[in-house]
Length: 247
Image 1: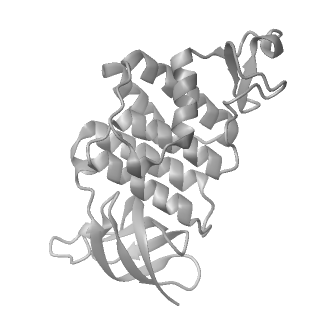
Image 2: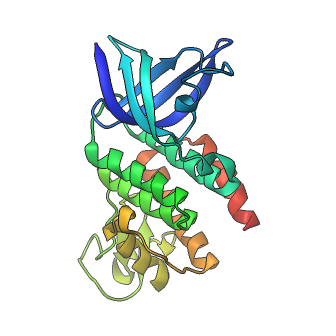
């Protein structure tokens, strides 16, 4: 069967001496693996299409299992995401998170537009930590694990200090959390940002000035939500964490 779809390369690996296998997150066929023949050759017409984070239109044949690329056109190369260390690390983390969180062939136009907007925001120079925070929260929501941050998940309290329950996937007020001090106490700034990030459209993201301390706290909270709710082992996480310590 012949497929034609917009897609984003979220993984690329060498195959044999001259080929590559890419994982595409497509607009109308879900997540699919595609063989790109000759992609490693110097004069390959498809080499640029097999680069990580490339957004394009892909034409491929597929019956069951791995597809084979027939033709493609680049819409946006997102080359800066491969050339700058911080951007590359965050884009790679987002790509791996997407690959592991989304089932094979699950078609989700909202999620496709989300990752497209995410890479576009990174490429256009938006704060890479802010973009990654927003993407992770929205991915949790799309995966069915939308964290409750507007009110206490037990009593509905909306005012006062709150702690994050990663297991329950939401915040608890002081009264409801008093028997479990192991929960993470959230600063006012982090709680406000969690609420704001859940509502914002990545494609309309403006400049947001946030202290590094708040970013670091927010990263820890979101990463633990990902760990508890999705239970994924992400190879790119360790490198991302090591970079954050240098900033």
